Image 1 (tube, rainbow, N blue to C red):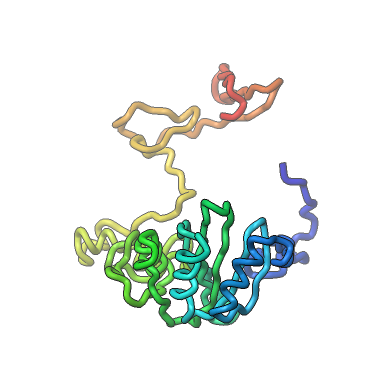
Image 2: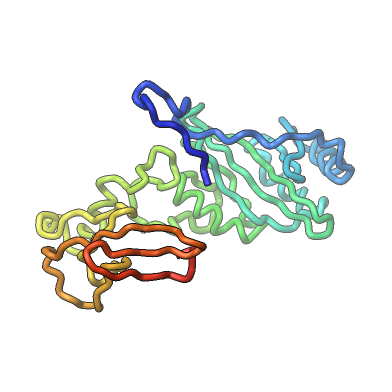
Length: 268
């Protein structure tokens, strides 16, 4: 459990010094400490410029130029036995220097090694598609476009894959609201009923933490259970509970009734 910190005079204290939490860096080691990675890096450097390379969490990270990505992955597939592209996506660094960091996670089953190839692009720039080298890049590049707005040149079908084709905005950008914007709140209403129905239906409730104890279709909570379809007027009094842990079980006592419920599973 998280250690308790006193909350005295909280108005005068700053608990966070950065807009976003910055995780501590995992230690990096030199590529020369691993013979396999050293040989792979030498083969890449013989044909392409490598800006930086190091080993982190038992895998090699290599930074290259954006325009070299197709050739580098082709070399790794055909000559270095990295035959699987297990993952690829982007990281939003727009607030820092208006760039995206693109990464490709490569796996060699014969060597039992992983290499992560990375490069940076400016906001608004496109990347070169590697779908012809690795079929797994087809959906990965579409997802990257869908979530970040980064297009892949020469992709066979550069359309959204998760969100509707006419969706506005890119949900994985750090500037995108966690619960969506005004467009998201009205999307289904506008799409199904038309904008003229906004005053009748109201915006979509996108707050994932919202709890409505009078919703008999989807809500269940100890002390509030009702059969499906029960008509709830909204005037029912709330049932108050106290929770006490005793010997690995939880006692839930209804304060408005002389009864108690014992739950045997402490995790509930």
